[in-house]
Picture (cartoon, helix red, strand yellow):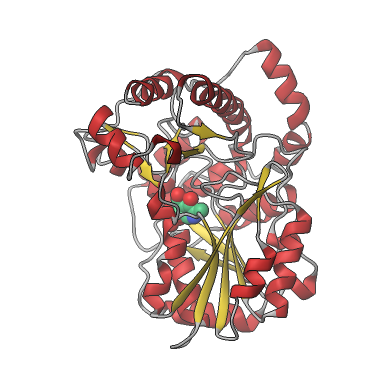
Length: 410
Ligand SMILES: Cc1ncc(COP(=O)(O)O)c(C=O)c1O
């Protein structure tokens, strides 16, 4: 075993989470940050999708951040690399313990280890769920706008897609229960939920998630809850994350909850996620559908995940402070400097969902590519043409540079 078994001491995440509110206030006042989110690190020619796919453009698209991961993760990776051997890996005890503690302390869930299925990413799990629980003629359901794979994995399963738009009500994006009830069919077998919602930035309330799970029970759907952004919530006391793991047992038994440290600690490229599947039959079917289609998960990703859950909380708290200031500056900028664009402050994620329909151009992402050399996410890929998604997981200076380019291209 490599010398990576950093202290097994109980994580401080529980206490840190409870103190989040006061920490936010204290740190806001003192502005004393222990971690550096301002110094730019060049990512060009580092084999980055974000920067190297279209090197001629300035990228604010795919959801990874321009920050180095926390020192604790880098140390764990260095230590594992120094071991020198990279044969086939399996989840080690330290990771299993760290996940159990994380689920208990941050997600308020006691999860038996055999309910966990380790995965190389969340997207394969969305596809697996569609393939496992749908037969020819069936359908997958989701609400739009949403992260593009949600509206594409049905192709893998060769089944239909039913999509229903979220609606703006009482100053927030919500489910359109009436339209959903109207749209669901007896052939619908799976509901794909994104909570926190990418790109809307909503953190759904416990009432909404219980209502959705009840909807799934009524229509006999497996509820797949993608919660990859759940540690990127700005104000946890006001908009706490209600995980599908927290549902009453009779509703939880039809759920697959997908979690990962990848977005929060910026290790998405290492490829690690896990599913929690309480029901034996659903879990067996899900796992059996993998067949030989998924490759082994890497040792490096396992050790990075352990370090993230075990030691990542102080960094995460400062990250959220930094991103919150970015979010507020972005909303202010778009509102005051960008006629034709509008945005609401998201409750979670470092992704801003910008309404560009008043601009009067057919494809706003293409407009800003042509006029400003920007690489933005096109709302059309999320099911809503006329919108753009801007990734502000970068230094404030870099974010403002991108926003200035947007303003100049209006
Ligand atoms: C909601 C959501 N799910 C899944 C992913 C990607 O997950 P993975 O890289 O583990 O496949 C993303 C990435 O942006 C996302 O926003």
